Amino acid sequence: MKIGVLALQGDFREHIEASQACGHKAVAIRREVELNDLDALILPGGESTTIALLARNYNLIEPIRSKISSGLPVYGSCAGMILLADRLVGGVEKQETFGGLDITVKRNAFGRQVDSFEEEIDFAGRRVNGVFIRAPWVEQVGSEVEILATVNSHAVAVRQGSILATSFHPELTGDLSVHTYFFDEICR
Ligand code: GLN
Image (tube, rainbow, N blue to C red; front, side, top):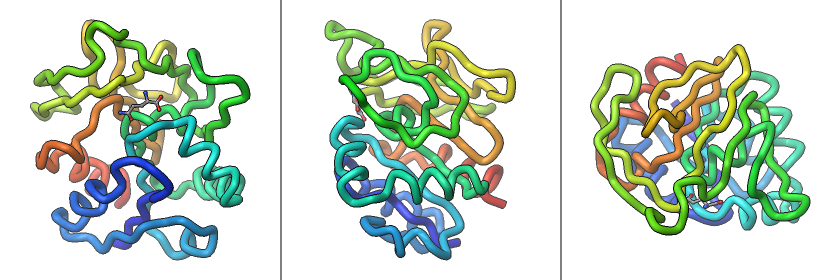
């Protein structure tokens, strides 16, 4: 498959490498034309406010919204989860998201004391090493949304149809389970 990774800011290189390690072609996306002929799109971890501002400046908000609503499979990790959420708690003023995922996400939800941590979690029947860095959690989910993983009873991985989002960063671990789940269970 041909996977596009939004490459405005954040850990897009790691997602490109993980996608390639899964046997796919992966390309960096910075312009609207590059969104054509993709089999899937990945929104990386990073800083959601920055990515949203750059996406606005690069005229990518509406094109990505329309790809998501037309059913292109999309996976967002951490900031990418925030960018997929329909509703945001703790965003900066007028912070935009692409939306499409019927969830309310709380930014920096785990708090300053436990800013970053690693934890083994169950993700859709797999054991994965969850790396959380100023991570959001999912406060509320719509009826179409399936919860795939939790930490302390907070949802940290969710799926709605062809959209997948995780609060954690599998791209930083070398563990390809989440990417494989996305490519094999969602994209095909
Ligand atoms: N806290 C960041 C944000 O709000 C997300 C952190 C991350 O992607 N590791 O965008």
